[in-house]
Length: 509
Image (tube, rainbow, N blue to C red; front, side, top):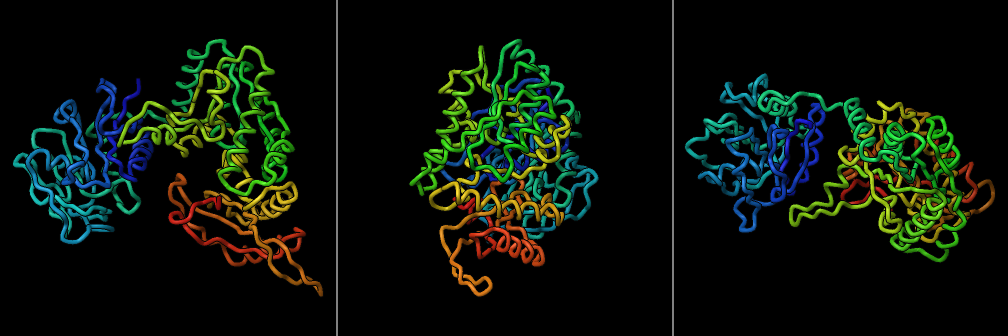
């Protein structure tokens, strides 16, 4: 049983980032709603209370029962968590005179505090709160302050309980990782054993025990998650795993063949199914994005199910569900035991009446990539940008047709190839080309043209929840624009999308 840190979630947008930072220290952690966490056993070495959009002064503010934790285990309250600890024990929390948001200079006033061991006397931290602790209980002592926040951090005398009114997990808190390491490793005593190699070893062992000699079928998408899941299962059960890769006609140029070839070199038993015509037929006349998604999803399930039924004695469906999918299914406002299906194969478990095995359900996306590297997954799959389940179907605005798909594939191929040639591909989290439902006037030679417009999209992100548009160099945009217009007959204009998420989404549909 792994040593672990529990993170109790109060609804903060930063909660997953705290978890990722703890895992970067090679320490396992789990996120639970504040009102629905498991029984504390010997594997739990410490607890972190997250921030929250709530105010502790709100009548409906989350108020957890910490009797099994506080004073018994190391405890760290972050922002809302710190204010909660203070108020619940007799301190006072009031609205700030001005919203405390952004960079601040933290001064350590108690150098004996273990949380700040090795931390500079003055360092930059990131604040994000509308309330502030104005007075602390008698058994609390202030350990750090800023110019505007007297109680920047505190420690409970006689306990291993700490509170901080800033966010150590964000990039702008320059020594935040040192503080988290002090808490997780030095104060909680966690051994730094959560590594890709240990995960592979343990997962394969568990899968062997779970599956025995049973057969598993898994739907490949060509992406990182399904690929890593298939490799883990393959190590555990070998030939008892069959993978199905469906060509829905909405993949990138030559992707079906390239992905199949990659999987063959890995020794996987893969069945490739060209079902593109079926998808095209059912997409005729559909322009609404949601209806397109439903049509593509429905057909995927039908094709996959049909192919899977050709196999005998299959008992399990393998899925590439990752930890954010699991977390998202459990709300702090109403915990649920239901885990959402992986978006690429949603609905399959119910239809096929198979048990589900999810080898990656404990991992974040960046951890999946590290495990993939440990499993020697080829770089062309390991470093592949996320690609939506409906594929180019939601990058063609309006009705989808084979002709439009061909047009977009050619333009997208030029764009992605260009990113790779310019050394930009790995700097970008996701990139793609969108075929717009408008045509524009152009001139080529002496001829007037009236052809399609494509938009190029490139963003940076860590998890897709937020994203910034990437400032592609002008010389790159100039070359790619010229190449697309000159080489793809039917396109005469190229634009670049400079919107971030929020307010825009990464995909256009």
